[in-house]
Structure formats: C-alpha cells, structure tokens
Image (tube, rainbow, N blue to C red; front, side, top):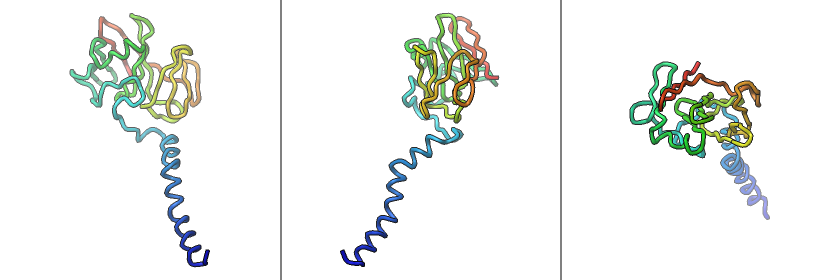
Length: 168
C-alpha cells in the first residue's frame, strides 16, 4: 500500500470509527447512566402499561389534586393492576402494588440509584421491584435498602373502587 492511500485510510478510520463506536455503544452507556431527570414519558415501554401520556383527568382513570392522586380501579387503564398485580403510573412516578383485594401499596417510581422512572418490572417471587436501567432490586417492605437506598412508600387509602395515593 502506498503512503498516500495509507494516510487516507488512517484519516478515514480516525474520523469515522469513533462516531460509529459511539453510535453502537456510547449512546446506550450515556442513557443508562443518566440521572433520570431527562426521562421521557412515552407509552408503557417494557412495563406492564402506563395508562397513556395524560397527567390525570376523567378519561385517564385518575385525578390529581396537589399531592393526592385518586385512581378509579375499575377504569380500563388500570386493568393490568388487577391482572398482573402491579402497575407503573409513570406519568406520576408511582409504582402500584396490589397486595390483596383490599390492600394496595404505592411507591415512588424514581429509582433510588439513578432516578430513572420508566423502566420497572416486578418479581413476585422475591417481592421486589426491579429497575430496568441497571437491574437493581428493591423490596416492597418500605424499609429494606437496595442500591442507592429504600424505595420510598406513599400512603394509600382504599374506598370502594377508588384508591387514593398521597405523595409526601
């Protein structure tokens, strides 16, 4: 290979390879380590549903009044709460857990580790929410610490088919 072609090849590799490498893994690494402040609320992702992109109202199945969120458990947007036993209401950054037919728990939907809030799953056999960004697990007992701290609990009140969650 002559020197002129070798320099063109080197210039090409220096200019293109970092961009290609960043496109393949750099952006993913940057997203995974974000603080969560720039998360977007789109669809339900790999969660079990999120109830749409609204911030409360009669057609969403929940209303918001200050720190209180009142959920109509009979609304179709919350059918996954009944069938799967949990629900990520990511618009309000709340995880809901059905403990029994008369008992529900609510938790912050922001990961104690990095603050992300749209990528959760629930492991029923271990009783833990699992953050989809890093795989960290958090118990639902409101006291056991996981990576970054305890998954904060909110007060819930059940009255008929209305579940009131007070974020405090």
